Length: 329
Image (cartoon, rainbow, N blue to C red; front, side):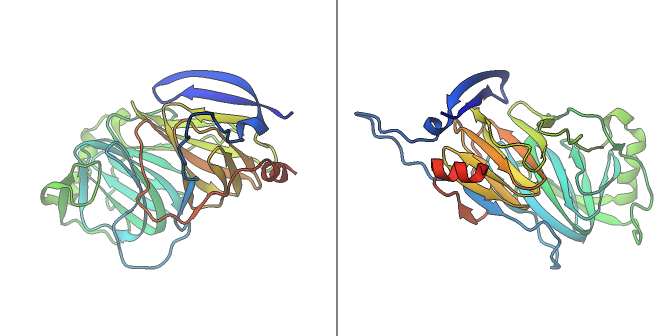
């Protein structure tokens, strides 16, 4: 009788956690309930995007998951986008997946390298200069709070990148938490004047670049808001065999695999994950993972359902006790 621990939490609304001992085989067995017809739930679905730059003309970010309360996007860039952008209703967070990127804002200029997070406060104009890079975007209704110290802070730097020339640039303001076709105002802006605004901004309010500590086996919550948390997890090969299960009773958990390979075991199937894979674990579903290589992933907890926007690459395999035992051996 394999006994495991289940951690039942109320994140992100309450930090209370209930720890329960369970028989793992029974936990993963779908019961037949007399006089009750259980719903036939779909297995976990995996979305995939590249983790290395692929040469192509500029294109807007591509949606991964989307709701009225959270938007997750994938973008790659060589050069800059054709306008400055202001969010009217959301903080815009990013995570650097591949290559370097310069973020230019009214609250300072910062450099991103793989593994860096940053947050652009609601209402702050910004543009990017990518050097064959890939980053993830998270649009979350403001306010969102940093939970770890900054690695670096925005500053004035003219020119912001080699070859830059000051000019009048388009500036577009949007609502719909960063969604397409949601522009509410547009005009031109003197770029140098915009970038010099940082000199009037207190250092505590400037753009902050964060890096996770990568503490082994511990989820580090980098950002929190009322309904969304964003965390980072590092796990070493064979150091985590899935003896602790997690169940969120008030949240979905969207995971993005950044490095290494691992397998999610859940009540909605078994899914193998590689870098570039995304998966959304629904409310109330118990899950754990088995790590096959040194692994790093992002977790996004959202209190509001956030369905997939991108095509589904594959579905999880049915959970069986024999399959779980094979993963552990």
